[in-house]
Structures are given as C-alpha cells and as structure tokens.
Image (tube, rainbow, N blue to C red; front, top):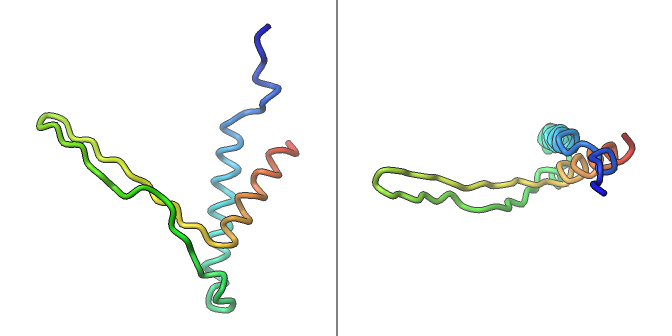
Length: 85
C-alpha cells in the first residue's frame, strides 16, 4: 500500500520555515554582534565555486553556508515549529 504524503508533512513548509528561521537568526545575530561579540562569530561551510567548461556549454556550481549561533538557533526553532504544525 502506498504511503500518503500526510504522514510526512509538506517538505516545502519545512524548507520555508528553515529559511525564515535561518534568516531571522542571522539578522538578529548581526544586529546584536556589536553588543555581544560572540554572536558575530561565524563558521563557513560549503563547496567552493567551480566551473565545468565544455566549449559549447559552461556550468558553474558552488554554495557556502555561513552559520553563527543565532542562525543555528533559528534553524532549530524552525524545525520545532514544523514538527508542531
């Protein structure tokens, strides 16, 4: 028997809540960094940009993720809100 999507929730709602939580945490962390310097510490995780050039087709790929303490807290709160909904 096929499993329904209701059992797993909507993935797009999770992505939206994580995005909003991460952005909110980053904004608050950057605003409070002059007062509390430890909130300004960030760790960058990701894959450096690289390009695949095939003469007729060029593809560039890469991403970075800057994580500070309040960004992590925002992501965690976004996930908990998703679990409650």
